[in-house]
Image (cartoon, rainbow, N blue to C red; front, side, top):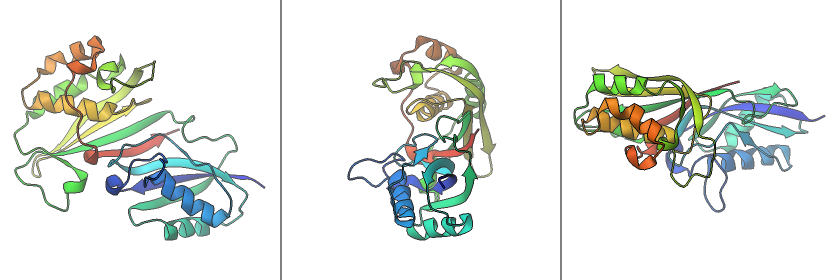
Length: 247
């Protein structure tokens, strides 16, 4: 009897070339696929909720695969984790409906980007934050972030070479959370979908606002221009986390 198994996976993406399998490169999907195939002793097709960039992380990436193996779920989870590197862990595994697809059934995603606006960065934090050792205007950052809520064409925040034609996305949350004692900022964005490098391009632009290089009032103009060259640089991948996927 075939089973459709849904996994929730956490990973430190620092040493990997992103989620998607690529020839001769170490990826999250590749590591998981090899581990699962060793257990079920058959080829599997692993579907993720979406790609994450090289160096980006996930607290709860969702993926699914079908197999004939009847191994109990608790044993399955333990077996997969025993074959994975320490930087990847299966948080949970459960039976899903026959029709469930991690990518096509996703309704929204929550990404978080962590920024340390302090003079020094601990070596124990360095892999998981974008270190900005200069003052940032918190009020301007918050006001600019709020401009992104709603349905917009995000061409200005998508890689220019992207072949995706429809670039309209519905953003339901776009806000900063500040820990002033630690000089840590976390930008949170939730939307019904994301374009390639969209979050990192948004963050890079917002940081230009925080530095005073771009006016916060110009965000709507940048959006409406649908021109990538009008937005800011792409922020590094290491500060980016996929927090959750809603179905």
